[in-house]
Length: 106
Image (cartoon, rainbow, N blue to C red; front, side, top):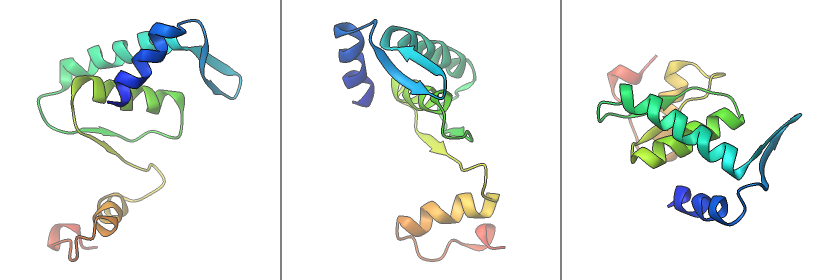
């Protein structure tokens, strides 16, 4: 659904600025092309599992998020500032999953 909403804007206003980060701006059309490029690259390596993204808060990270949505693939975003344990334990804690099991213990 998020991609469909975005695609509506691409169709209505392709030349309008969709994203700005620092001194970089992308139009809806350019960002849509970038999403499709990422989706194409991910499709080559995606084997029906989960796509993991360990990126900062950037336009590229949003591009990967939309590309995964376009593919219908589940996406697990990881925080590069956290340890592997923290990246696994934090979402489980938020989801209310009590004990994480021996594989997730320090």
